[in-house]
Image (cartoon, rainbow over all chains, first blue to last red; front, side, top):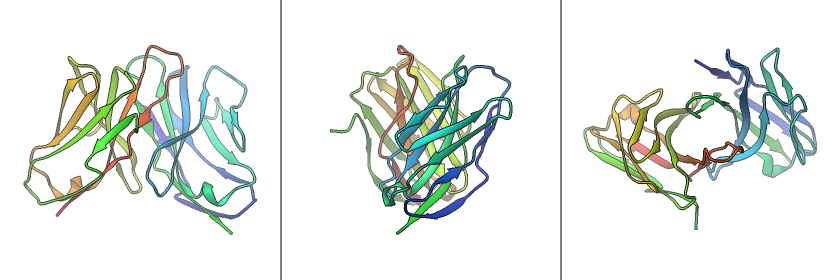
Length: 115
Length: 114
């Protein structure tokens, strides 16, 4: 079974700084998807970024980018020029391409952006 | 209107009561999921359904049951609620027909069992 581990329960940075959230996963599959979801205090689950394992190029979405290291099974999220609105819980998640398409989540990292 | 709607938004109940959480979607997706979120554990899959006649257990199905009444509706029941079922519950949908696999989540139901 796949597992996803986020080893940083909480992080805090100053506004405009860059912050990196860590995620590692375990799987025997060669093709899969990885995601970062953001959960603000409104508790809505918002998709931040998505990476396909067969693509070597790291995904980027505006100020959000990932560092995908397939061999190391690592998938970190970098937030550049952090803003107060980035304050949220962030979840890393894994999905197999084959079989039932279920998301497996990490434990989450609570990120606080300080003014 | 939200594409994935969960009701109620919040619910407080007592141990032993039967509770139903409802989810409806207007996205036309065939796949629906129920997750629960606990602090420090992330989201864990309870049940999922790929169509009206397909129901599958997830990681933590004990104490729960589901019903897929229609393509657009997927309800989660707690037959006899217990305090450790206090959690934030999410319904989600996905469309397997495309290549952009991702889940769309409702706004969650916060359930407290006293």
